[in-house]
Image 1 (cartoon, helix red, strand yellow):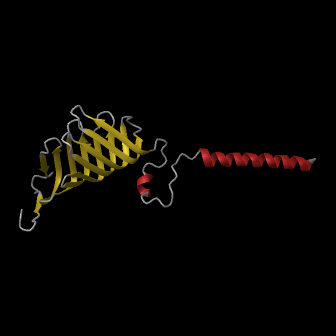
Image 2: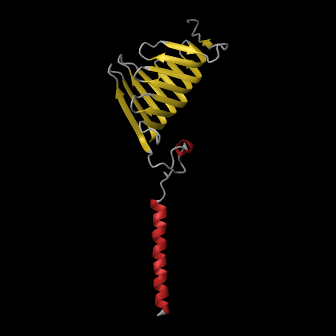
Image 3: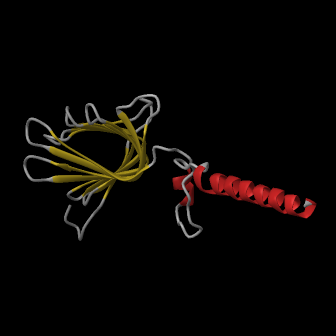
Length: 199
């Protein structure tokens, strides 16, 4: 009789242990699992452990003039502080202008405002337009006003010249560009590119 009771108690403890193990292993872990082979593991760790992780995000908008804006990211979350703010990782964006031209933007991170489509890009920002390439640490895009402000370690490259500055302001409609240094005593560094003597 005692042997039978010990076996029953042992089986009950075994069943409870298995239930607890299954619960802890499968249900309580809210962290995103990342494989060892993931090449950009540090990028993903910034959003690891959140319940709101969204993969392959895509937003599209069009203004009243017919200009279009699409932004994509590999990962993103909705900001816990502001529900209209989307925090994105590994970002690419395209602006389709009414005249048929395209402006390509890429960065490591971005904060996209779902209410007004304004976007703050950060980390290895690159803007490509025809034969122009602008790289910077940060960029603010106002889609409604059709303006972009690139700042911090700005490098501009074209077929005619290269320049280094602190800030570049671009009107995306008429392509007017304003180049500035934060300190008025510093000069903008411009290098001309000579192609076979024809400049």
